[in-house]
Amino acid sequence: MRRFTSIADIVSGPGLASALTDALTLKAEPWRYPEVGRRKTLGLLFMNPSLRTRMSTQKAATLLGMDTMVLNAGSDSWTLETRDGVIMEGGATEHIKEAAAVMGQYCDILGIRTFAGLQDRDADYNERILESFIRYAGVPVVSLESATRHPLQSFADLITIETLKRKPRPKVVLTWAPHPKALPQAVANSFSEWMMQADVDFIITHPDGYDLAPSFTQGAVVTHDQRAAFEGADFIYAKNWSSYTDYGQILSKDMDWTVTAEKMRLTNDARFMHCLPVRRNMIVADEVLDGPWSVVIEQAANRVVSAQTMLLHMLRELAR
Ligand code: SN0
Image (cartoon, rainbow, N blue to C red):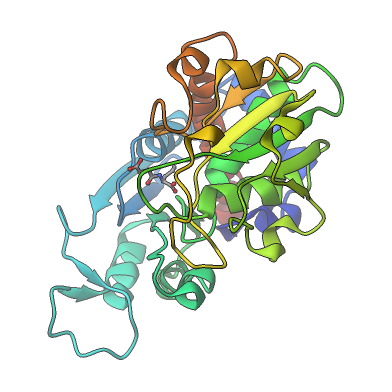
């Protein structure tokens, strides 16, 4: 793979089934390929905060014998301009064109984390920042969450479901839940896109006005009745997102959508999932997160497996 920015890169590369087999192998035997990344450098550029992506990707690189360099744009490097053709008279010091090209000189693979601005829907959905970084870096690029997707998270989510499912085709529910801030649609988009390709019955539930972009949810069952969706579910995946149609707006903070123990009891003893960081008692009640349903820590642990699998495929391609 020359790039890993969405499930499409896996489907047109190694194939999803084969990537999943590799992931399960690496989960069982993390040190199986300690030499593959020898004398290779992974550069990670964060334009937004990160805990799991940062640490799990570094850990994944270490397991493959790679060196890692991490840069936080704006705090330990220059602030970056990402628009084309602007007069740089404002706060941004360096253009992403030079920054990406220079990082490409030092690194064999680059990762970039950038969030949706939630102002200009076209700019976000065209992935302007990620795509210009790819254009100017000159080396393979892995998305560490972009404006519209979080593929390393979604792959970890799929690994989690595959390893914990108790029937061949589990019922998986993505539920919107309330949050104090306007958040990107990236995690929900991505999860939906992956679940549509997985062997699961997939249902999305959210309040009126929170429909995701049709390109990510085409064919998925969508309902505004959260309780009906929970009935018989094997996995509950909670996430907040801001409106796609009323772009970036918060239309509801309705706490009736919080995932509670009472709602979990409607399910088929479902596992509770969230990508983290999670707002306790907004998204999910303490008793769920601290109770037997929650698999959020195992899910986070699978972020290492997800990143390691993707890096392994990219390193093999570099060696060709
Ligand atoms: C991010 C998001 O895309 O929703 C990252 C998830 C991996 N989440 C947040 O920004 C949460 C911020 C907050 O204030 O709770």
